[in-house]
Image 1 (cartoon, rainbow, N blue to C red):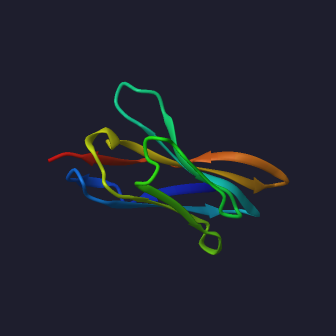
Image 2 (image 1 turned 180 degrees about the horizontal axis):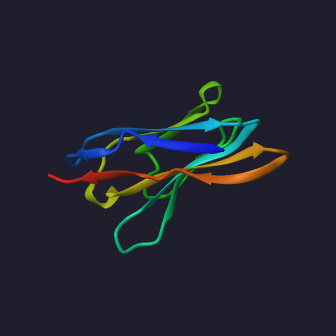
Length: 119
């Protein structure tokens, strides 16, 4: 079995920063793309950022210049550094990973961590 566990969410004031982490564990042969998604109340889930195994990154326009995604392949962990947070960033943030297991690439999700930006 494979598990993705997020941490680092919480309550922060506008303009503040948070760093999210997501660690993958289990019988993992390799991890390809890892990413962060978010879903705000009443809205659809949206992509925040992705990173490939060779550190090629993509970002949603709304977070460019404020968020930075990174990963540690030795630890099977992806990070999301979030700066200059504003109330529109409030959402449940979930990590995603494409993992090679048993000869097949499969898509895995974490349960999510709440980020609330409020004064």
